[in-house]
Image: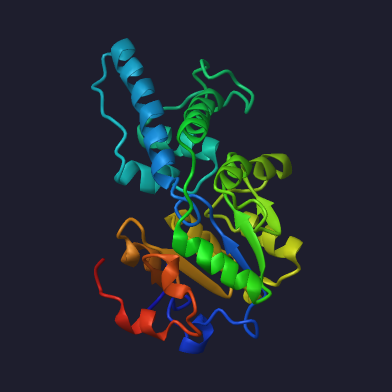
Length: 276
């Protein structure tokens, strides 16, 4: 199988798919949709924010209102990306260009910064009112990896990372947190660029070839692939296993519980259906 660039196969010899200490030193986890059940929260907040903006624009311009599509638009334009990149990329897909503004813009401002901050306020409200639940399989895997001496990082485009981990009672589990605030402060390129994962690996003292990336977003697995990480695991919670493979995942699971107490992933590679 050729990769997204037609150069490197996404299926390597089976021994490279075992998360073992002789092969790897660190595991880098995405947050939303991988560790915590918050990807749906983000998607719903993106939709609410964009639909309100698009409805207002339609009234002002006379254009037909076309709502934000939770399946296609979320996956293609915003999932896994830094917030303001998501705003910019989705609006570009609709032929809309707004002033950039700044990260500190008011939520009332019709700028990239203002729309992004509207979405962030909606997410924070849900976190405060409803709380956050981690995936049980993810918690079990993280505990297992820590017990076996792996260095662990969370790498996310979200600026809500610290609040989410505290709400899920997981903030003590990670050696390093690279989030949207770090991305802004250090002017890092967001996913699918590998910069955030490369920084996490560097801070953990691990070479990319000896680090594992765990992602559910297309942009995320592509970032892991682009960074030449030793193993990129896709989590197909959206039933998009083939899509994750095409974007660079070496192996795909439906839930991280499938990796708990498994010395290898032979069963995963041999047992995955062609369509999920």
